[in-house]
Length: 271
Image 1 (spheres, rainbow, N blue to C red):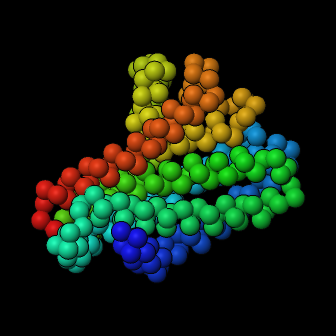
Image 2 (tube, rainbow, N blue to C red; image 1 turned 180 degrees about the vertical axis):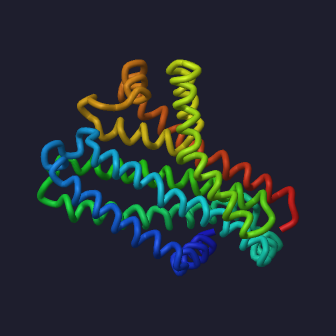
């Protein structure tokens, strides 16, 4: 399996799109950090400032889109090129194929995130207390988990569709729905239908990117300030640590469940 991870990762990192995503995210992160440097000097990383929220939202866009599309393309390329059929003929099961693909795509997304967060760290060096470093690293871990969930969703798309172009378009559409579309549904539930906070919580747990966003704000805002309605609801009803645990489990489920379904889909179709 390790050989498959290295193969897929090498293929992904040699692609121009992955390199462009890495460079673009690093540059955008640095620009956001520079623009919000004054805010970081005053508040550090222990308050959900507009700049911190911008970095969170940025990290939940480009790296997750990269992971979703790359996951879908990797699976469809493996099927169309006969690689998966050859490996299955040599005794490699569908679960191993999916896990190795997921690991490679997630690592590629993690490298993009590390590049962006490294750029932010260079900008903030000397301007933010070293005591905020655990929050910074925890935030990076949350973003990697979000990229992993997007990779799993993309892999499921690649296992279900037939062609590479179709896989890329569907994966991008699903990502857009998770990144933007479901937020509009959540707003509609809360404002128009007045479904209440439990329904909003269910909608958040049903969207890995929204779960990661709320989890990030809970991790950042150690002083319990501006968390937003869902963050405040979780903080008050469950407490900070249980709320973080619930959202972390939701992200882990979003990594595991689509991968499991993708393995089942590959098992039922000709590779």
